[in-house]
Length: 285
Image (cartoon, rainbow, N blue to C red; front, side, top):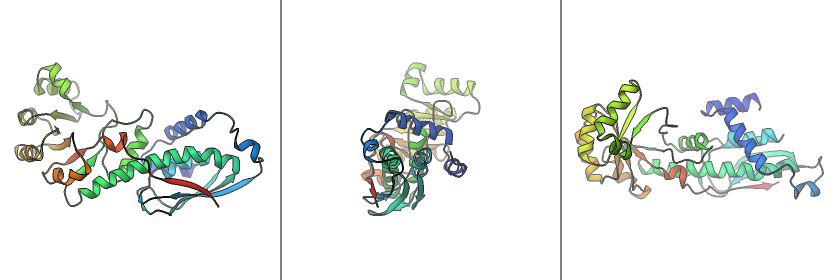
């Protein structure tokens, strides 16, 4: 991989080796020979084209798609940056290279660009809905295997905030942990004893659990399926002693109603598990 491209990925918070492995897996899935393009085009024939947005939204994944072009020997020029708001008809990337290679790259690059831009566009809609409040939209672990780092990157491109990347970097005490341990306190104290410096978030279904979580020392609390009125009361009870995150039953249409309760975050799994793809196409020029 080109050093400049690797540096761009690192600057975006991505691991170049991980992204390259992902792209090579995608190339392997397509098999060793393109039986459509190879008979039609000779090895010396070249093509140029533009990856163009076909709707308004937020773009993400340009350096990730850049790895596809790099591995296939295609020259690529970015015409937009990740996180940009783009309009229908706007050129995002211009490419030039062997026709066979460009056609082999087309679907893989589009799969990455449309998926990540869809996540970024959906995230921006949530962020815009909450503008003017202190609340931020945050993702979850509801990601596709192997794609978590780039999906969460797309959330950042859309103005969102990442939750934990995996099970080892932060603890989240959920309802099943509490049920099996016997109480919020017992679950929390067991983790704190094992990992004294670890960030621990506690999921609470009731205001009584919120009180218990604060009393035991939780500094982050997930308010699960609570009404705006309950969230407002939770904010009053906690009084700044812990960050509060709303979760469950949320929609972008009511995001602002939740944000104005005073919570710090809205947890939205749909950002990564249900985002609609963003329409982008490649047209030869």
